[in-house]
Length: 270
Image (cartoon, rainbow, N blue to C red; front, side, top):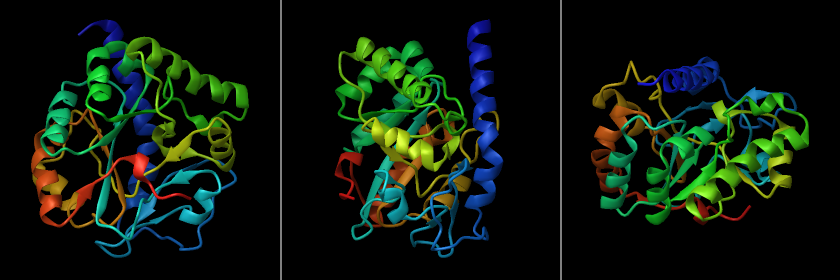
C-alpha cells in the first residue's frame, strides 16, 4: 500500500470516528427521544432512537421539519419498502461483491461517494452508473459541513465533486446529498436545498465502518433484521467486509419478511 493511500485511509478513518460516539449513543435502544424533535439551529449529529423494534425510529428532527428543506430520513412508511444506501469513502475491495448482490436481487441502491472514491476507483463508480444505481454527493473532501457557514464554501465542496464525477463518468451526479458523519445544521439544510439537493439521512444503520474490527455476520443480523421497518432508509458502508459477505443473505431475509427495494427516486413527495 502506498504512503499516499495510507494517509488518505487514516484521514478518512479519523473523520468517521469523529461522528461515531454521538451516533452510537443515539442509536442505542434506550436513547432518549422526543416525537416533537425539531431541526437544531446549531450543528448536531444525526441520531436515532428505537422505542420499539420493527417500528419507525425517532430521529433528532421530525419528518415534517426536515421536509421544509427537502430532506428525508424515512421513505414511504405505508409500504413494506426499503431504500438501500451506501457511504463510499474509499474502495476497500468490497464494493464489487456488494454490486454483485444488488444485481442478483435486482435491488436499486444509492452510493454516496467522495472525491477519493471517484479518483481511485473510477471503474467501480462507472459500474454503479451502468447498473442503474444512484451515485450521490458525499462531498469532495468529507469535511464537517456543519462547520461551514459560508454558502460559497459549502457549494464548492459539492460542485467540485460534481465536476470530477462528470469528467470521470460522462454523466451528471445525482442531486442527492448526505452530510459527512451525519453532521448538519438548519443552515446546512437550507444551503443544500438552495443548490437543488435532496438531503438524505437514514433510519437504520449499525457499526460497520471499523475495517480492523468488523462485526460478525450474526452481530450484523441482530441489528439489521429486528430493526427493519416500513420505509427504512438503510445506511451501510461499502468498506465493510461483513457487508460484502452477508448482503446477498441479508437481502434474501428481508425479502422473506415481505420487503421490496426501491430507489431514492421513488421517495414520496414532500
